[in-house]
Amino acid sequence: MKILSAIKILSGLVILFSLASPVFAQNRQKIQKQFDAWAKSDLWPEANNRGISAKTFNRAIIGLELQLKLPDLVIPGAKLPKKRAQSQSEFRGPAAYFSEGNLKSQARTGRVLLRKWSKTLKKIEKRYGVPGGILIAIWGRESAFGNAKIPYSAIQVLATKAFMSTRKELFREELLSALIIVQRDRLNGSELKGSWAGALGQPQFMPSSFLKYAVDFDGDGKKDIWNSVPDTLASMANYLSQNGWSPKRRWGFEVRIPGHISCAMEGPDRARKTGEWEKDGIRRITGKPFPASRTLNKTMMLVPAGRFGPHFIVTDNFYVIKKYNNSDLYALFVGNLADRISLGAGPFKTSWQKQPKMLRSQIARMQRKLEKQGYDVGGADGLPGFRTRRSIGEWQIGEGRKSTCFPDLKLIRELK
Ligand SMILES: [Ca+2]
Image 1 (cartoon, rainbow, N blue to C red):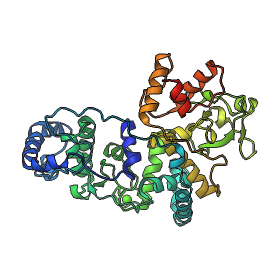
Image 2 (image 1 turned 60 degrees about the vertical axis):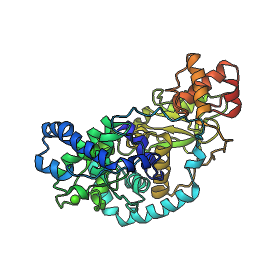
Image 3 (image 1 turned 120 degrees about the vertical axis):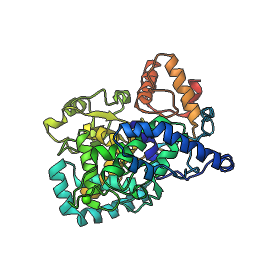
Image 4 (image 1 turned 45 degrees about the vertical axis):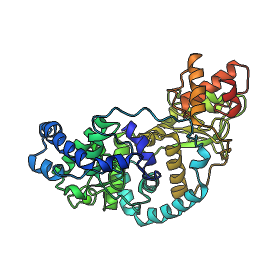
């Protein structure tokens, strides 16, 4: 799921284009022939082993027309392209992610839907322990509350990617799962609609997640995450519940971290009790106390923009949201949107400071430099995840500086 979530976060944003499409167009017939041969000799034996019938397979795969306009395709048999240089790709900071206009409008729609589906949501919370606000927020984020167009045939997308993409193995697994769905749920292959990455329906589940988590909540006998709102919301709740959601627990709190406390104490592997954070002087930004609950024995510091933005103390539930989509900003967005929908909350009290433009290649270079000095940056990928942020903080402290726990142009110059 983890690798796919990176695709998922982009699925709503990416404009489809294909660099190599003229090449594919010239070779369409040849590629199509190769696909048919591959489907029969390579894919079919494995599908058959997994219990997929010849009838299902032939109907869904044989004669299938490839979708050659997808990104990340390679000519079959050709060498994988070298990883595209990231030198020109800009690092988009948190400020861009939290558009206030977008959040406000989603919260407005979300509150209407929370009322409209309140009976269903109560039943869902009773069964799975996940509150309505969180579900409505994820629904909004994944498919604009079911309004986003989900235009592709998932089988067509997944078959194309399993045959000729840069990550064939991953998509092959998902294709086999999709065929099991078609067979088991008696859906016609063409009805299995997904995104350009093969994520299905309103919750944007990859097929393997559909098999694990989709439920029929309205009782019509179908797990219909395309058309049924109760099935959609309950399937998301089941996903979160099975991934460890704790009922009656917030996702987290915006806090103020005093200057003398190091921002390098963040991370899911550095949990403490809320009482310990409080002892150090960390307070909720509202001035209210943390809920006095034994469930808050394990809370984590989170500073997605280091000292250049709001600070948080989060619970395990924050990391359960991240299992839906592996990004701190995604989980924060969902948490804040849920609070706006069900608690009448507004934007974070501390704003995200806009930073001068940084390139991912510059950040990656800084990460490699830190790695050379023995710091764990979680991989030099040009993205400042929590391991990179706290390594920056620790490096700064080691140099006798004030820790900011976030890259900036000056730091990039100094860590060349
Ligand atoms: Ca149903």
